[in-house]
Picture (cartoon, rainbow, N blue to C red):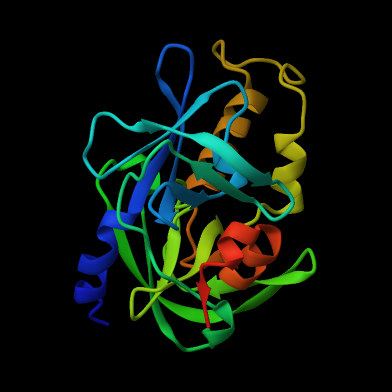
Amino acid sequence: MDFSQAFQNIQGAVVNVLALNAQNTPVSSGSGVIIGNGSLVLTCAHCIIPNTTTIARFSGANNGQIATVLFQDQQSDIALLQFQQPIGSPATIRSSSSVLIGHEAFVVGFPNNIDKITALSANIAGFEPDNGFELIRLDASVNHGNSGGPLFNASGELVGIVNAKHGSLSNFLQQIQSAQPGAMVSIGGIDPVKAIQQLISEMQRNLNLGIGYAIPTDHIGTLNNQVQGLIQP
Protein backbone atom coordinates (compact mmCIF):
# COMPACT_ATOMS: atom_id res chain seq x y z
CA MET A 1 0.00 0.00 0.00
CA ASP A 2 1.38 3.41 -0.98
CA PHE A 3 -0.25 6.12 1.11
CA SER A 4 2.67 8.58 0.78
CA GLN A 5 0.66 11.26 -1.05
CA ALA A 6 -2.25 11.02 1.37
CA PHE A 7 0.19 11.27 4.28
CA GLN A 8 1.78 14.41 2.83
CA ASN A 9 -1.66 15.99 2.71
CA ILE A 10 -2.62 15.24 6.32
CA GLN A 11 0.62 15.23 8.33
CA GLY A 12 0.03 18.83 9.43
CA ALA A 13 -3.27 17.78 11.03
CA VAL A 14 -1.79 15.30 13.53
CA VAL A 15 -0.44 16.38 16.93
CA ASN A 16 1.20 14.86 19.98
CA VAL A 17 -1.12 15.30 22.99
CA LEU A 18 0.77 15.57 26.28
CA ALA A 19 -0.32 15.83 29.91
CA LEU A 20 2.13 17.96 31.92
CA ASN A 21 2.43 18.00 35.71
CA ALA A 22 3.14 21.09 37.84
CA GLN A 23 6.84 20.79 36.94
CA ASN A 24 5.96 20.77 33.21
CA THR A 25 7.11 17.17 32.97
CA PRO A 26 5.07 14.88 30.69
CA VAL A 27 3.17 12.21 32.61
CA SER A 28 1.24 10.92 29.60
CA SER A 29 1.68 10.99 25.84
CA GLY A 30 -0.94 10.36 23.18
CA SER A 31 -2.01 11.59 19.77
CA GLY A 32 -4.74 13.78 18.32
CA VAL A 33 -6.08 15.16 15.04
CA ILE A 34 -7.00 18.74 14.17
CA ILE A 35 -10.54 19.28 12.87
CA GLY A 36 -12.99 22.10 12.17
CA ASN A 37 -11.44 25.51 11.64
CA GLY A 38 -8.09 24.31 12.98
CA SER A 39 -8.72 25.20 16.62
CA LEU A 40 -10.23 21.85 17.65
CA VAL A 41 -8.45 18.54 18.28
CA LEU A 42 -10.06 15.13 18.65
CA THR A 43 -8.32 12.69 20.98
CA CYS A 44 -9.16 9.99 23.56
CA ALA A 45 -10.66 10.79 26.94
CA HIS A 46 -8.09 8.56 28.64
CA CYS A 47 -5.34 10.86 27.29
CA ILE A 48 -6.71 13.64 29.54
CA ILE A 49 -5.14 13.26 33.01
CA PRO A 50 -6.75 15.03 36.01
CA ASN A 51 -4.74 17.84 37.63
CA THR A 52 -2.42 18.22 34.65
CA THR A 53 -2.09 20.70 31.79
CA THR A 54 -3.00 19.32 28.36
CA ILE A 55 -0.94 20.57 25.42
CA ALA A 56 -0.68 19.70 21.74
CA ARG A 57 2.60 19.91 19.85
CA PHE A 58 3.71 19.07 16.34
CA SER A 59 6.25 16.48 15.28
CA GLY A 60 9.71 17.23 16.67
CA ALA A 61 8.62 20.45 18.40
CA ASN A 62 9.81 21.25 21.92
CA ASN A 63 6.87 23.49 22.80
CA GLY A 64 3.15 23.13 22.38
CA GLN A 65 -0.15 24.97 22.68
CA ILE A 66 -2.19 24.74 25.88
CA ALA A 67 -5.62 23.22 25.34
CA THR A 68 -8.98 23.57 27.04
CA VAL A 69 -11.02 20.37 27.34
CA LEU A 70 -14.23 21.32 25.54
CA PHE A 71 -15.86 17.89 25.68
CA GLN A 72 -15.06 14.56 27.33
CA ASP A 73 -16.97 11.27 27.27
CA GLN A 74 -15.36 8.55 29.36
CA GLN A 75 -17.66 5.75 28.23
CA SER A 76 -16.89 6.23 24.54
CA ASP A 77 -13.32 7.39 25.33
CA ILE A 78 -13.54 10.57 23.25
CA ALA A 79 -12.39 14.10 24.10
CA LEU A 80 -12.47 17.34 22.13
CA LEU A 81 -9.81 19.95 22.83
CA GLN A 82 -10.11 23.63 22.00
CA PHE A 83 -7.40 26.22 21.40
CA GLN A 84 -7.63 30.01 21.46
CA GLN A 85 -6.75 30.18 17.78
CA PRO A 86 -6.19 27.74 14.88
CA ILE A 87 -3.04 25.69 15.35
CA GLY A 88 -2.89 23.81 12.05
CA SER A 89 -4.62 22.43 8.98
CA PRO A 90 -7.74 20.37 9.79
CA ALA A 91 -8.42 16.88 8.52
CA THR A 92 -11.50 16.07 6.46
CA ILE A 93 -13.90 13.82 8.37
CA ARG A 94 -15.58 11.04 6.37
CA SER A 95 -18.58 9.03 7.51
CA SER A 96 -17.43 5.71 8.96
CA SER A 97 -20.37 4.06 7.23
CA SER A 98 -18.08 4.03 4.18
CA VAL A 99 -15.61 1.73 5.97
CA LEU A 100 -15.70 -1.90 4.85
CA ILE A 101 -13.68 -4.99 5.82
CA GLY A 102 -10.70 -5.23 3.49
CA HIS A 103 -10.36 -1.50 2.88
CA GLU A 104 -6.84 -0.10 3.05
CA ALA A 105 -6.18 2.53 5.70
CA PHE A 106 -3.37 4.02 7.79
CA VAL A 107 -2.79 5.20 11.36
CA VAL A 108 -0.77 8.30 12.26
CA GLY A 109 0.48 9.25 15.71
CA PHE A 110 3.24 9.20 18.29
CA PRO A 111 3.62 5.64 19.67
CA ASN A 112 5.93 4.63 22.52
CA ASN A 113 6.97 8.22 23.38
CA ILE A 114 8.43 8.82 19.91
CA ASP A 115 8.30 12.58 19.41
CA LYS A 116 8.36 12.37 15.61
CA ILE A 117 5.22 11.66 13.63
CA THR A 118 4.82 7.98 12.73
CA ALA A 119 2.58 6.45 10.07
CA LEU A 120 1.51 2.80 10.05
CA SER A 121 -0.18 0.96 7.22
CA ALA A 122 -3.40 -0.80 8.12
CA ASN A 123 -6.34 -2.72 6.72
CA ILE A 124 -9.85 -2.74 8.08
CA ALA A 125 -10.06 -6.18 9.67
CA GLY A 126 -13.54 -6.19 11.21
CA PHE A 127 -15.83 -4.63 13.78
CA GLU A 128 -16.18 -5.19 17.53
CA PRO A 129 -19.39 -4.44 19.51
CA ASP A 130 -18.71 -1.99 22.35
CA ASN A 131 -21.19 -0.08 24.53
CA GLY A 132 -23.93 -0.01 21.93
CA PHE A 133 -21.79 0.75 18.89
CA GLU A 134 -19.10 -1.02 16.87
CA LEU A 135 -15.40 -0.28 17.11
CA ILE A 136 -13.39 -0.57 13.92
CA ARG A 137 -10.87 -3.41 14.15
CA LEU A 138 -7.65 -2.85 12.20
CA ASP A 139 -4.55 -4.91 11.57
CA ALA A 140 -2.03 -2.19 12.50
CA SER A 141 0.71 -2.34 15.15
CA VAL A 142 -1.03 0.02 17.56
CA ASN A 143 1.03 0.87 20.65
CA HIS A 144 0.88 3.05 23.76
CA GLY A 145 0.87 6.63 22.46
CA ASN A 146 -1.23 5.90 19.38
CA SER A 147 -4.32 6.51 21.54
CA GLY A 148 -6.28 9.49 20.28
CA GLY A 149 -4.58 9.36 16.91
CA PRO A 150 -6.43 9.33 13.61
CA LEU A 151 -7.38 6.38 11.45
CA PHE A 152 -7.40 7.60 7.84
CA ASN A 153 -8.81 5.83 4.82
CA ALA A 154 -6.62 5.42 1.74
CA SER A 155 -7.64 8.90 0.55
CA GLY A 156 -6.48 10.56 3.77
CA GLU A 157 -9.96 11.14 5.19
CA LEU A 158 -10.55 10.69 8.92
CA VAL A 159 -12.77 7.68 9.63
CA GLY A 160 -11.92 6.89 13.25
CA ILE A 161 -9.94 7.65 16.40
CA VAL A 162 -7.58 4.91 17.63
CA ASN A 163 -8.21 4.05 21.27
CA ALA A 164 -6.96 0.53 22.06
CA LYS A 165 -4.80 -2.37 21.03
CA HIS A 166 -5.64 -6.05 21.26
CA GLY A 167 -3.90 -8.16 23.87
CA SER A 168 -5.65 -8.88 27.15
CA LEU A 169 -4.14 -10.58 30.20
CA SER A 170 -5.06 -14.12 31.20
CA ASN A 171 -7.01 -14.72 34.44
CA PHE A 172 -3.82 -16.04 36.07
CA LEU A 173 -1.87 -12.85 35.27
CA GLN A 174 -4.79 -10.68 36.38
CA GLN A 175 -4.84 -12.46 39.73
CA ILE A 176 -1.13 -11.81 40.22
CA GLN A 177 -1.56 -8.17 39.19
CA SER A 178 -4.25 -7.70 41.87
CA ALA A 179 -2.23 -9.45 44.61
CA GLN A 180 -0.89 -7.40 47.51
CA PRO A 181 2.90 -6.75 47.49
CA GLY A 182 4.61 -8.14 50.57
CA ALA A 183 2.50 -11.29 50.52
CA MET A 184 5.64 -13.32 49.88
CA VAL A 185 9.07 -13.31 51.47
CA SER A 186 11.41 -10.95 49.65
CA ILE A 187 14.36 -12.42 47.80
CA GLY A 188 17.55 -10.38 47.94
CA GLY A 189 15.53 -7.35 49.00
CA ILE A 190 13.15 -7.70 46.05
CA ASP A 191 9.45 -8.36 46.59
CA PRO A 192 8.57 -11.08 44.03
CA VAL A 193 4.92 -10.00 43.74
CA LYS A 194 5.84 -6.38 43.11
CA ALA A 195 8.49 -7.39 40.59
CA ILE A 196 6.07 -9.62 38.68
CA GLN A 197 3.42 -6.90 38.73
CA GLN A 198 5.90 -4.49 37.16
CA LEU A 199 6.75 -7.10 34.54
CA ILE A 200 3.05 -7.65 33.75
CA SER A 201 2.57 -3.90 33.43
CA GLU A 202 5.40 -3.73 30.90
CA MET A 203 3.95 -6.70 29.02
CA GLN A 204 0.55 -5.06 28.89
CA ARG A 205 2.01 -1.81 27.53
CA ASN A 206 4.31 -3.40 24.97
CA LEU A 207 2.64 -6.67 23.95
CA ASN A 208 1.45 -6.19 20.39
CA LEU A 209 -0.52 -8.70 18.37
CA GLY A 210 -0.82 -6.37 15.38
CA ILE A 211 -4.51 -5.64 16.04
CA GLY A 212 -5.94 -2.31 17.15
CA TYR A 213 -9.32 -0.62 17.52
CA ALA A 214 -10.71 2.76 16.51
CA ILE A 215 -13.86 4.67 17.47
CA PRO A 216 -15.83 5.35 14.26
CA THR A 217 -16.50 8.95 13.25
CA ASP A 218 -20.25 8.39 12.99
CA HIS A 219 -20.40 7.43 16.67
CA ILE A 220 -18.26 10.44 17.63
CA GLY A 221 -20.74 12.62 15.75
CA THR A 222 -23.59 11.36 17.94
CA LEU A 223 -21.65 12.54 21.00
CA ASN A 224 -20.83 16.05 19.83
CA ASN A 225 -22.77 18.31 17.45
CA GLN A 226 -19.63 20.21 16.44
CA VAL A 227 -18.08 17.00 15.13
CA GLN A 228 -21.32 15.81 13.54
CA GLY A 229 -21.51 18.94 11.42
CA LEU A 230 -18.06 18.22 9.97
CA ILE A 231 -18.69 14.64 8.84
CA GLN A 232 -18.79 14.23 5.06
CA PRO A 233 -21.20 11.61 3.63
